[in-house]
Length: 190
Image 1 (tube, rainbow, N blue to C red):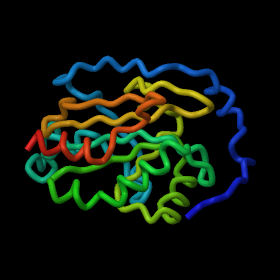
Image 2 (cartoon, rainbow, N blue to C red):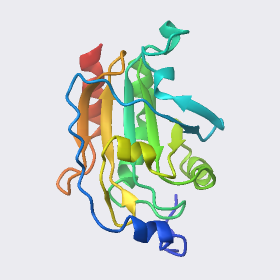
Image 3 (cartoon, rainbow, N blue to C red):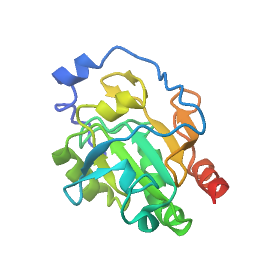
Image 4 (cartoon, rainbow, N blue to C red):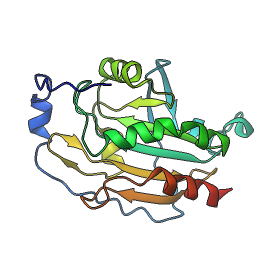
């Protein structure tokens, strides 16, 4: 487990470009189609599309037609985790098997680059897919907001057709949706 207080990689140009807070503005209606995206699956090095997991894919629909949890998370560098997100990352990873048992996939999306994500996968022994969004394009598309150099966390539960059935935006009182809440939302889709 990482306990480093090495902040050398934290205060970069990117940190100062994203320093000013922008609140989460996602106003996606429940039942609306989730915005499509394509990102790198860090462990495999492959580009994946959201439609690879939902019913919007034309080929092999049956194999990938399942609920998806999108977990946008804050990881500043491979050595600095958001103190509000780190426990959530660990809880999602520990509960990944529960999501899979229910027929769902969890896609964790981080704004760190692929090299940093490789270190994170190794050090945290991540089982769930980690997607790299270093330009924060998908974070902006999903309107998660930003503060202190990184995009804010958010969670979305999508049904088999790729429609949003649940969304949670960051607040200081409730920074991340609990694993239990996400599992109950997945159960409600079944």
